[in-house]
Image: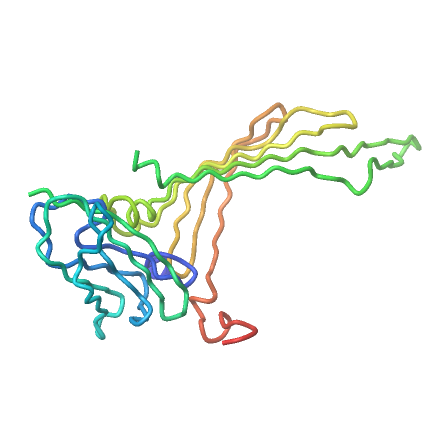
Length: 111
Length: 146
């Protein structure tokens, strides 16, 4: 019972990043086809965003952010073939209970 | 350097102001005893390292439940009378852990006396329930608005 109440990251009804693929702060050898971010709460798709920027600050994702209907705690954006380098993922999440959170993390592509 | 980002340092400082500067009591033998109530300087510090922040914003180091919810913390609470007889610094150092979940937060700390006042080492624990998450449509519902 105790651990069941503790399950799920974050507190006070906010959607916090639980884990991501590529993982937060990771170095990957193969260019990812998409960035996926899992949150602690279901999201309101229309008001949640996910962007990927290169080291120059230019947005490089395909601007097709999606939140699957059957897994509304996950947000995805697809990517074109990326060049080696460091990328920044910026996310903004509006949880179903109307709280807004935002953040960012980086990953590096080093074949 | 990036592994320093999950550190957080917070502090408080203030003065405790008594409502009376002294109080006098009559002992059983009829003598009077006067106790001074000084102004008290109160200082507090808390140093935390947030593993949830590390995992979500700095680097996923592979921590999974429940370790990815742990926040090690060290708190320092000191006070010192600054007038009416003054006195030494006294307080406690409290190392411990917070575990932040979705519906509740648990914290436990050792309480270690510091300063000339002395005292015995103890322990303190807290359990917070987030009512707006446990009961979002009843107890956790806003009083005004939706």
